[in-house]
Image (cartoon, rainbow, N blue to C red; front, side, top):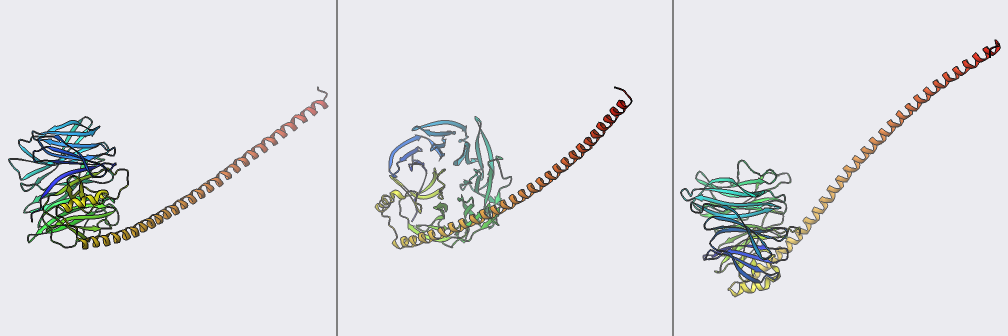
Length: 462
């Protein structure tokens, strides 16, 4: 069976209201609004004759949109008071070039726009560019020039807690395709001088995907093709521990994978890799942030369209341990995301909608999933207790160091005080000695004066 796929972007604000964006068959950008019960309440067209777009949301629940029109105008918008405030960014040469994979990223007040493009004359060379706002002007930077097939595989970006941007892409290296990684330092506003090659196999590597979890570990997934079979690869980069700043290859369970993008999400502190195998959508899960993986359950896929959803949720102040950049799901009059609890409130209505389309739930898989969930909860509890124990140990060690420093300071203070007392005693002694000498001199002078007076009196002088 050929699975039908569509693409869209979904934004969810802090009030649990969702907004769906997609390009329809007439090249119109459609904007659907959902209430907190996950029911579509309004639909409208933002703009016509569109080539590509990207949306995100800030901590104040303002929706930000970037789109590229057919004739080349790149426009940046903010949705405020039920109105789109538009600001032209640049005019791109859509007559000579092909532009794809438009992506918008915000950090605080920093706006970053990414896209890839190629010239129609030589479609084997692609470039990834970044546009940033500087005061009232927009500046353009080339991140990478890439040798590629005529069909360029999408690049994927994510950010860490500081706002640094991480990017993965595929490029042709001699006779093989390889996966590359680069990094943007938001403080120095510079990219790595030389992108790092992640794949080591000389096989055909394709469909890279990058994800950063809540612990700031960087994960890259991709496929390596061998004997017409795709093998899912996974490498992890940690910025803590003994293996920090080193890419570590993680062994995944073996299975047959269809030629569709595999994505990673974090759901209640559990990492999940979602992939498609034959006519089923499946997932792996990890409770230790990608150090090891277990097999989860599966859902059968029917002939109705499956959406690859680019997703962003305003959870800036919630301290959430859940994160989605991309996921698979269904979008109609309501929204359903596979293997995620973001829309659990209206899950019964969603499952009814799926059943109406001749979809079904596998009961044995449900039991397995329930068992997995219970095991995950126990493991999470043990990890939380271990983390608390480690924190207490660290606090105890810090307190011991502080006590030692305090003792040293007191000892130093005591020593200094004793020195000051000795100096003061010495000064007092010196003053006393000086005063005694002055007193003796004064007594001697008085005695001399009295003797002189007696002599004068004896001789009859007045």
